[in-house]
Length: 446
Image 1: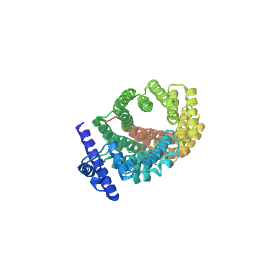
Image 2: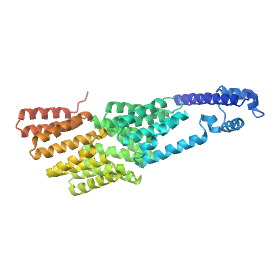
Image 3: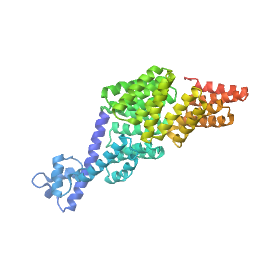
Image 4: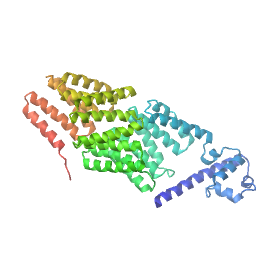
């Protein structure tokens, strides 16, 4: 709390110095002395204190001084005219609304706002424009561009004029981008720093903390530390219930479902997924509804409800296609391919796996889905006796999972290659691949 109070004092001091300098420049430009500007309302000494940043005038005093100088009160207070700031804030609000509505035009709407925000010299508007543009670029798959913008926002947010909560929010966005680029260790460090800032701030920010915990649980899942992942997501659910924020609740239950699925608790995973989909449905967030419908399809298949699974996966595909979300459509088609593979329809599995790969082409943030589709393709080809083609697909899957940095995913590729080697009669090579897969799946604790 003392640190927060200290930052607030420094921020007030810095803003006061800037305001005082503007006041002095405007007074000199108007040809007035300090006594003349003060008039009968204030003393010369009071004006001098304002100009030297020793005193922060009230809003009423700023308006009175601005009127005396013939300038906009907003310009005197912040260096930006009220009308100009209002126009920029309106443009940012519209771009943010497009982003929340999953509109692909959000990236284009944010594009000119970065330069406009820089021109104002107002750090808070600059960070708002940079973060918004970064998130919009992430949505269209330009993660490298997003990282550049979010790093710039992070640097600006280090200024004394920002609170720890505001810094934590920027770190959360940057961590999410790093996660989607499969930089798991970097993302984990960013989420840890963000959570520390939020907790030390002393400010009410339970929704922010819940979102940080939900994202951090993804990192633990990638590292196969499901106990840590479960702890984080349980805290996230508890915090989200307290703030009654549907988006935060949906995110927490989404991750809880994924963890329960990985641990083999499929009924519980389905329950969590249904709760998450209900929350996103109330928000009319069709993107997350589509993703959760895909997951529910997979869970119903695991629970033996094949017909319902196919119906849900087709529904997920239709929503994603309607939204223009090719990558999510590819995920749904890949899931359908897995269902057909496991039910013995190898030709249909091959066709849908190839379709999924077309839809997922170039999406580095969906490398896990690309690898899974390659694995299904290879399995379907293996069952059709097309061994050389199957090997090409298995090697492609292994390369994708190598980028992902997931031992369990790579183990699946090694098992598939082991099955291929067995089919070719190379039992020594098969045993070597199976052994490598088994070692990768061991949970090592130090």
